[in-house]
Each structure stands twice: as structure tokens, then as C-alpha cells.
Image (cartoon, rainbow over all chains, first blue to last red; front, side, top):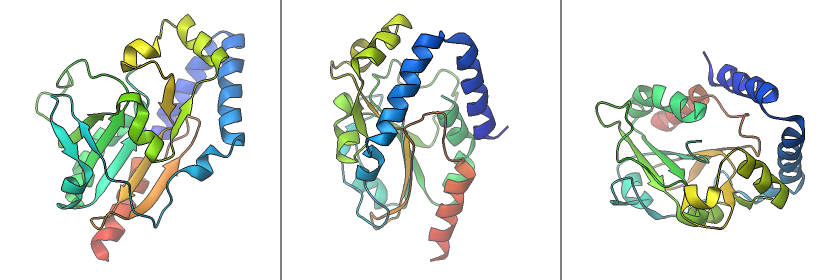
Length: 82
Length: 131
């Protein structure tokens, strides 16, 4: 199954499970975020990725620059495990 | 967590392209290792407290008050889950960064149910190998 198919399933499931009023608030928030132009303020292709140091699950500090010294990085931001 | 699962499934191809997968979320990690991962996967899972790095990448947004109410009605207290009370979240995003530190692809969508297929990301990595 592709990611798109799985996400479509999640969207359909949410449509059935979540009360209409709550769903409207969620959809409006997404719409407002899109309309705000927030996406235009995201760092752009062709520019340098901001460096950072963050802890992993065991508390070890991981620095982007150290990883890039070994090769390309796929960097994924997500909301959380819920 | 469909996207994380899909990225994990694509790990062999990401690794074969010479790249490292790094996932960042504001949520406190409960366990040092995913319970379903018997061997550590070749990825870094990092905690971005208060979405400070997401802010630097232009991804952080503050949840409107009515949406906080919806999340609370789901039993989801972001302040508790994140260990901070900012009620911010990152817009879901995926970047390919080349070894020179330059962003080569950026996939961002405010709607978390619209995400780029990992295969497209792998395709970008393969173009880096050729160049």
C-alpha cells in the first residue's frame, strides 16, 4: 500500500470517528494555516539547511553537520506519536 | 504515524543511496527504542523541545484556541506530551539535504494527511549520487 492510500484511509476513518463540529474546527485551522502563507516562510530549496544539535531518545546530542560530513540527510519533521 | 512507518519501510533504499534518515518531533520519547524494532534502525529520532528547530526551519505554528479544545476533547494534552506549554506544532515536512548542507528538496503541507511518497525522496537521493 502506498503512503497516499494509508493517509486516505486515515482521513476517511477520521471523517467517521470525529464529531462534525470538531472536524470543522480542524479543517478550518488547516485552511487558515494554508491561507496565512506559512508555507512560503519555510526554508527554501537551494539554500543552506540551518544547523542544529538535538538529543536523541537516549539523550545523546546529535548534530546535523556531523551527519552531513558522512553524506546526505533525509530530514523529516512530524508531530508525534498520537 | 503512517509517514514514519513508510519512511522506515524505505530505509534500505535511503541507506543504499548513502543517506541518513533523521526524524524530528516535539514529543518526549517514552522509550529509548521502538518496541517493534528488534534491532536498532539506521535512523536518528530527535526531540525538538518547544519546536525551536522547527521554528528555525519556518515550520512551527501555534494552535488556535478552538483547536486546543478539540485536542483536549480527544484526551490529548500537548503541554504534557511535549514537555512544554507552547501549544506549537511543526507543519509536517521532509527535506533532502546534500552532503554540502544545501536543501535539494522540500515537501511541506499544512495538512498532515497529504504527504510525499518516500519513493520520490529516494529518487532525489539517487540524483545526488549521479551528480
